[in-house]
Length: 121
Image 1 (tube, rainbow, N blue to C red):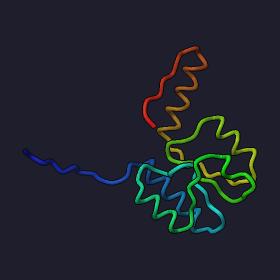
Image 2: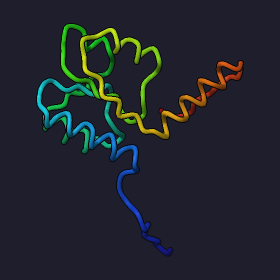
Image 3: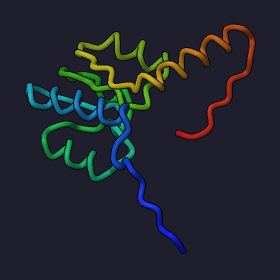
């Protein structure tokens, strides 16, 4: 079997952007939460937690708290975004721009009566 090494390795642009944003927020201090794991890499998420970020599963876990919440690289639903707006949090949107474009395209198709099916996380 021939093994071909990829010319590029590591995080994609959207993941690297999310990490940079989250690390900057953590460095500023204060209470920092990520809404779900920031990226799909448990080791990196653990490192971010060790630096002070806390992963929460949902908006309901933020009730009664304050600080900054970072939206994960894979984005959140419109309903979740509205719930975040009602809380006393600074929100840093680390959604990958490619994901945002796909979400906007899906919303546009849905508004035209199309059924949109999302496969995956």
